[in-house]
Length: 417
Image (cartoon, rainbow, N blue to C red):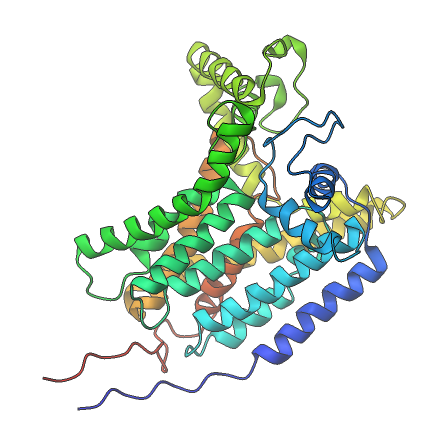
């Protein structure tokens, strides 16, 4: 008996990719703005990296730093060395990340009838399109995450695909460290149908280990340059403290001397001091901290105001507020629609081919992990954007009229004996 041939790949990648890149390029031409918020710091770090000085603090002191993750400014530095300005360099990174996302979606759903819908859902998503203009790391992080999943769920699903998937997750962690939390999930949920529990555990272990090994050289650099171990960055303690302070309301505010630790020298030591302060704050007022978790979760998951807030302080600062609110409502409504469609795919997972069921589970799991992580630390509505590519894949299945596809995703059958 021979294996059935795989259904032909749909031909939507070219048009959808072209539209995605064109829409974002036009938006950049009309609305492109200089780096704002954390983007000003990313751009400053990228300048020192591009000049060969290494990762230095943006205050001009010339001291080594690792406060922000290194991945995104390193990507910007590549284009700075090519002669682009910071604004154009960051857009080039985000545009390349958009292309990687589209290619990964096409690969992940290579033989699925839902491929075309998933590609167009991402190509036309208003929030990611507008966020592509921001000098911020979520677009690149989301691209590396979906690329890792696409490799983990490739038809062969052998050791090589697991190793490469782990490396990509490690690179994603260098952009946003919380990506490491998804490594075990990607490993376990990407296992082929009928996999035993030990086999799922083995895949999760391989992918997680490769992700950590990818991060390790940067961790060793931090240990050497900062006189203390820091896995990726040194702002975790500050974020945990902010997430425990009642007057921060679950979001960011600038830490002041009254919050403590300003007398502590060295990034690693100050990060640990902030962590101790946060633990003390939480243990002294546990109910206050627990009560803030739903607020921070909702702050991360219920709105998509960040793209318009960013542009509203830049190129759209003179735009009428009702226009910004309307566009924010469009972004938020689109995100909610993706979530509802993905939940529908999850509810009907028992009726779906194995890989579709696993993908729907992973999409919702990534949202929950993201929301809970920022429920512990600080919340912001831009933090869910890296999950959108996975959501588009799951939503495409959930929008199908039937739970079980008439043309299931192809899984190579074992040869007859």
